[in-house]
Length: 238
Length: 238
Image (cartoon, rainbow over all chains, first blue to last red; front, top):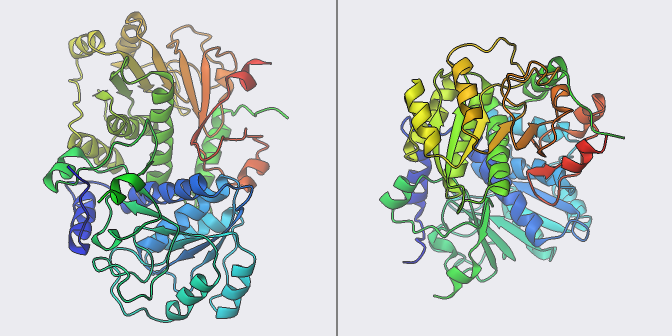
């Protein structure tokens, strides 16, 4: 039985069920575990001695929150993260997560293009937490300008859940999305990343078996007590 | 510079600062990371093939919350946890964490002594999350009866933060506490565990450098992206 790829609608439904009264998870919990998995994926693939300076790009939604959590953990791991978050989300949680980063002396760029351009020159790797599974095109400002700049930098990119600019179901058909080297899918991979051919990890080890069975997710076994699992082989044999 | 051992008061102050408006952490976040570290410590020290059945003993305070989080992660790791929580805490978060465990089909014992006695016979290892750093004796019912039963079971015990029954500063002077094989201290070890001579881990990798410096904690380096670090040697060379 192979891993199930999720439609945008199913991904949303699983999130909703986890955070419903019955599921009982708080956004704080899920975001903490998701962001930790993102940071661990980057740490596993880009050694901190060679790729110390991480540009963490955060979008305005929950994906951006995952990015803020990841930035904090990366700092704990000994990386030097910098946050690019030109459109901070309005939920209270993003402000708290951002304060936690500031308390770790993690700098945040100005939202202008020059700041981003300068930061790309002094970064070793990008964590792309701009758009997640609720993304619907077209890509709006300032990200319409930012994505091409990230691509042009030729820095290695680790994308969270869905590479930014890709349609959650149709993938990068339009050709305007990032081309990450590494992808960390959360909960289960999305339809749009079937064609992704880089290194692929899965994080979000918090789906109860009952929910996994209800939606026939056929999740892979995570090793030991790890929060991430390499699914490159499982997703590319098709 | 050696690791600092915390008084009960200082442990409380660090917790308060982390969760203050300035620290910006939510209890959900810290408990998730603490409970994950507890589960990982047990998984690192007691192999799931030989020690599958874990009796997770939860007290009425935040320590019990850590235990509930750990039970959930242990279940994710492939263990078979059972919860003993005869005095559930009243905070809403404990109820949510307990619901998450129920959704994972993790059973909870009745609060009577016979249930505990029976469960001890069919468990391989105990996770002791009964009393934490805010514990003040004397030990009240039903834990005054439960602790001797846990000790008499001769099951291996992994204690969280402070072995239950130990004074947070004076340790097990009164001799009524558990004698765990493994201890996972959270944030930093407490004064009372200076004399602990089992395997000792540290978890709670979320203290910002500024807070670490303010209180001269001299925390050890965690390996890679791990959430726990073995401090047995560092704490026993004194």
